[in-house]
Image 1 (cartoon, rainbow, N blue to C red):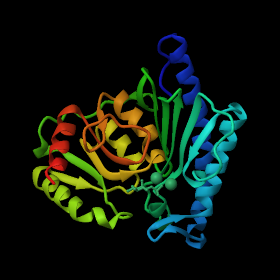
Image 2: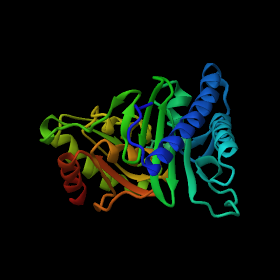
Image 3: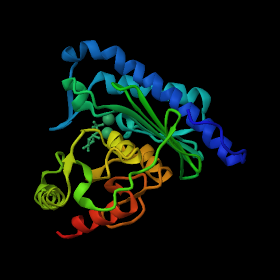
Image 4: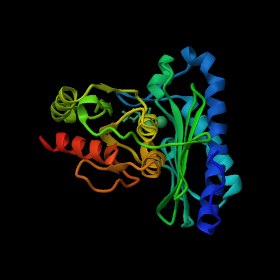
Length: 275
Ligand code: IPD
Ligand code: CA
Ligand code: CA
């Protein structure tokens, strides 16, 4: 956890909410870790032809919600595996946006790139976020106005100033084949203009990689609110820029995401505009 900074009430609230979100992420991660030895025997269910869910996703989500609702009984939840469940009857200022296992396909293959991601909104404002990379046991956190952190290390986006030496991250439009032709144009331009492109398979991890300067930029043509809620705040608090492909400030919603330091973000946006 980052060192204590400032005493303004909003700052304290953000930090308390972050601590709670971390507790819930850790509880979900315990479910995932316990299932790792038997991943070969898990049942996969297809939400769509290339979108899988296992009992682990469902149990991890239930565990996170259990921890959060014990502390905040009136909170609302937007959680991937229960997104279609009936909305809470009580409108609340507090909403947790949860991806209990971001990188399910990696998890199922034993590829160690997956995370629990929890974003916290207060009155619609992203206030805290945690991305817990389970195999590396790296806990990335951000609180509004208090920075983005990996443990006790403050995160900053990279200072890359030209694309030639930049390393970019991306996600493929594997659930939306209709987007592939346009995406091929995008990735061709980015590959030709940079020193490399990586595809980790976990969007929340990708966003932490940009926030920590491991990647200079990232884009994906279509993501869900639970993929990005925590990561958007992390990028902003690390001094970066996070928008949609049209350059509008990112919202916790469905759609494209483009992230990076200001220069790399602008460069990426230009590559995506070219058809
Ligand atoms: C997926 C991962 C992946 C991204 C997909 C997401 P899931 O999340 O973040 O990197 O390309 O669009 O749906 O299904 O593993 O939680
Ligand atoms: Ca996800
Ligand atoms: Ca997921």
